[in-house]
Length: 143
Image (cartoon, rainbow, N blue to C red; front, side, top):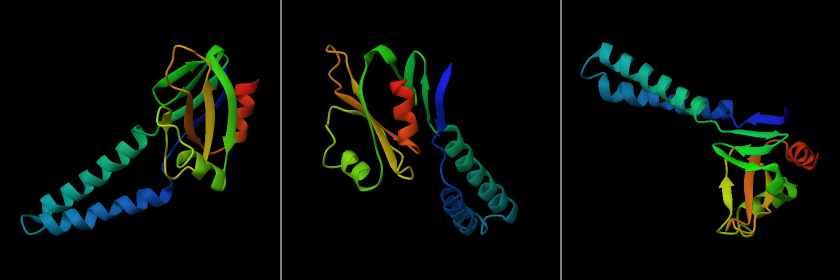
């Protein structure tokens, strides 16, 4: 049973910004052929949008595990959990970040959740994962 799930989609502004590939590819390919220029421009933009969509990682808490992207951590190995937003989230991603930590960051997602790994054999002290609603993830992991 899923207790929490979110997909870290790119914001609409990023899709709009990637549309700049259209005039750039037209500028390069129009002198060769109008048809080629339009075809390449559309193809490149569609390709970028598909990649942004397909590569958006999911963060999920189930009754048995915590998943972030392709990684998963059994709930039995979840230690202390804390959520951070705003300036504290930035500090967690920067000066307070342990180099051994496993991270999943998206620059357009402001909140983070810190999940300690309670496995003495694992050299990773904690996971730091970008989430839009840190308090909901913390509540799901503590349930």
